[in-house]
Amino acid sequence: MVITTVMEWYSSVLEKKYALSVLWYVRNNPGMTKTDIVRMDRGGEKTKYGILAELMDLGLISSEKDPEGRWNTEHLVLTEEGRKIADHIEEINAIMETVSQ
Image 1 (cartoon, rainbow, N blue to C red):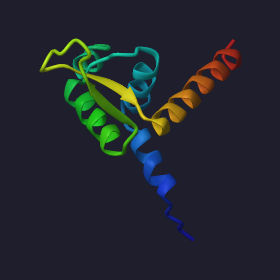
Image 2 (image 1 turned 90 degrees about the horizontal axis):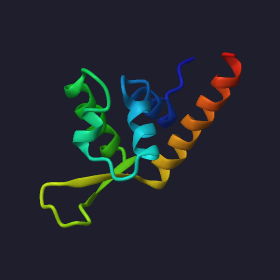
Image 3 (image 1 turned 45 degrees about the vertical axis):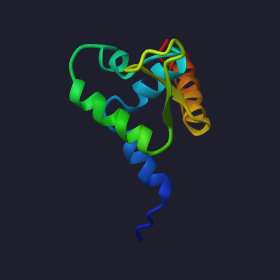
């Protein structure tokens, strides 16, 4: 029997490369921009832009105008749902630290 749920669909997006990292970085680095996300580590610029767009389309990340008024700068912000997921990522990291020791 095959059961498809919304949760499985979301989970497939979160399994993509950089998805969890992007959520975690935005959670732990308020005010990040799309450029900051792309530069968070080497390689995969196109992949990072793509996953960021998907996370924004899902409503997990939104953007806000630059508070200093720079016209071409938007800061990334987690939505309530995005924050919940990012908080769970942080919990998983904490558990893994104790398990891997």
